[in-house]
Image (cartoon, rainbow, N blue to C red):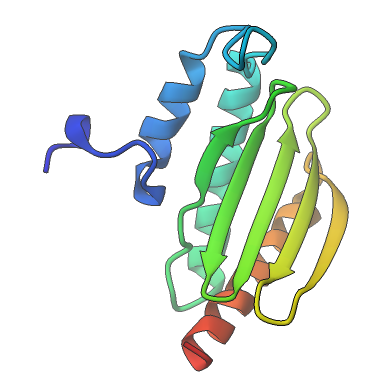
Length: 141
């Protein structure tokens, strides 16, 4: 399948999804949603590239790609799914701030943390957590 025809909702299509998000206009959500800023999306693309490079240099497995969605406030929500573990990172592109949330669907517990995404250690924490839940999914399918 060619890249042009690839489903932009697929996690492997992060560049295509970012391009789609760049085309969103203010009012996209029933007349109220703010469009993500082009500068913010450029910054996010660099961060996701850096996260993938950091991950690849530290772990044996490749970093899984997130699903990406716009938020009503002009940000982006990144989602990862590892069996019973659902990870969400809601990203405020303007402030370079994020809210990380982990939900275990079977046990019904969750955890969250606020992150300063301008700091490299926040992305390191994200990489470590993604790896942890990637391993848990492999251990307990």
